[in-house]
Figure 1 (cartoon, helix red, strand yellow):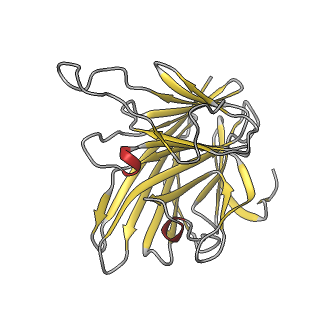
Figure 2 (cartoon, rainbow, N blue to C red):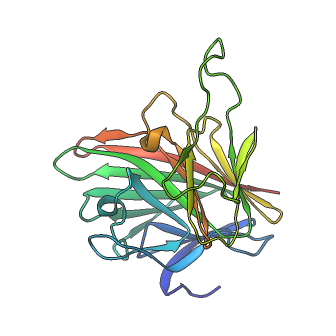
Length: 275
C-alpha cells in the first residue's frame, strides 16, 4: 500500500486476519479495513467528496467517522482536516479531536484483538463548553460499492398481548419507496448497492443490535447495544443508512442526551468479520 492515504498520513493496526488504517492528522477517521484473505479495502475511499458548511468544505475522505446528531451543516459538517492527537494505548490507539465552533471533543478509542478479526471502537463525546449541549453520538461507516447491506428486523412482540406496533421505517425526503436498491423482507431489510446517483436514506429502531455488509464471500458486522427506553433522534432511529453511486453507509446512533459542561457520553461498536 502507499505511504499516504490519498495524500494523508496514516497509522496502522494489524494482525494475521485484518489491516486497519487510521489517519494521524485529519479526522478522527478509520480509512481502511482490509481482510487479508480478501486483499481489498471494505471501506469506501471518497477523497474528493465534500459537503458544504458555514466554515468551509467538510471532506468525507471515506471510511469511518464520528458525528453528533441531530444533523445540520453548522454543527455536523465542521471541517476536520487537521488537529487530531494520536495516543498509543494497549492494543490500539486513541484519536482525539477538539472540534471548533461546537466545543465538542471527539475521541475514538480503537483496539484490535490480537488473534481474531475483531475490533472494538469506543466513541466518546465531551462537552468542553460553559453551557449544556444536546446531542446524540453517531458512528458512520462508509462501505465500498458492490455488496449488500443487511438490517435485521424485530419480529417479536414488545408487549405481553402482542397488540402494539413492534417496528417502523423512516425515510428522508429524497428517498423513494420504489427505489430498486430497497428490498423489504420479513427477517431483514436489504439495500443492494447499485450505480444509481440518486441518494436513498432510511432509518429505524434496531432492537437486534447489529448490521451487516456482505461483500463477495466476506461478512462485515457492526454490533452495538440498543437502548429502547431512551429517546433517539430522527423519529426514534438508532440505525440508519445512506447510499448513492459512490458508497453505502452503515450508521448507528446512541440516545439523545444533554451534556452539562465537562460531561462525556460513549457509544460502543464491535466490528467482526466472517465468511
